[in-house]
Image (cartoon, rainbow, N blue to C red; front, side):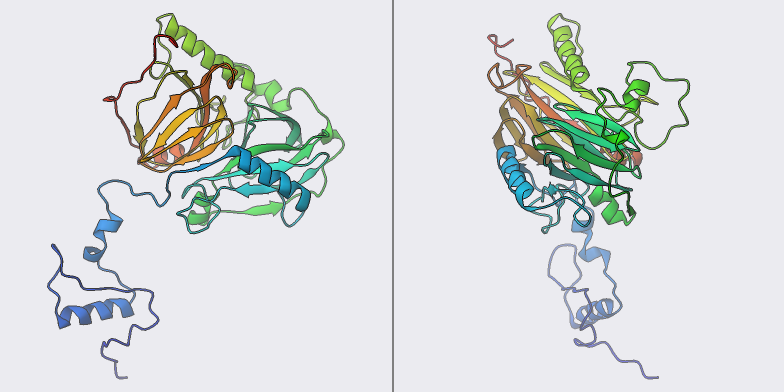
Length: 397
């Protein structure tokens, strides 16, 4: 058998394309080097010296870019979809995903996070299914929908955070005469790129018992008692056993932090900036294995110190107004708006909230991120810029 010598044509059809360039640190461009590169192409090989700048940059270069979605527009389009698009097998959910403009049209907010507005019409059911993707729901407005997780009806109301670990059966039911919208967050992009996802259809309809409207779900009755863990608790499973984190408790925790600071006892992450992390009552870990969820309240007149972090985040403005800055972009934001903070882009927020646009008087921000993944892999890193201190006017203090 005679081997074919390397020529310009032998690598035709190869996805590998190499170009010899004259640059510092690169080998001299010669016919022999060109022939070597054609050989690399034919055998699907890529030399590190042509790629090191892209593979090993000095700091993260996210494929995502900072971007803002206006809640008013999302809500309008979701309502139009409610009139035109049925919910049922095939589509499963009337969920409309945020597509980061730099991620090639994929329905991904960041390379690891999926976020969407979901819309359910009066009396509608979103059919039961389960998937390995870890998920949550966060309600910025409205009430009257129940999510049924493993047969447990869980009410959804404004400000409630509802985590649901992967591979749990779940369906949704709107028991009211009004449509309702909320945001979904999942680790779909992460499981997509790691090729780890599974999905299974469930029942087409939930039972009459699951259509009941209890004030508290069974998971809340067992787990929603601060500082108390039931001795009957089974061994920990992935994700939090508590299926609803009520707004009244989140609001009280943030309010108390700011009051303690005002009284001179600290309690905030920085002056005028209260924050909490939703945690698993079983062991204090994150509510989901791949997703961290937090809530931040920035008092009127305060600007937070810019912070960079590995990993990406999605924020939703729950209440109030202000200006958020992500990298080189700044936006004025109001209730419901969503925005993305890519890996290692500096982020800061300035509160311009007041009594007319915020129940708390501050800028309230819900945040979810991929931090648990980075911490598990020991790739987490943060950098806080204290050279630009938080500001608070005497009038607003």
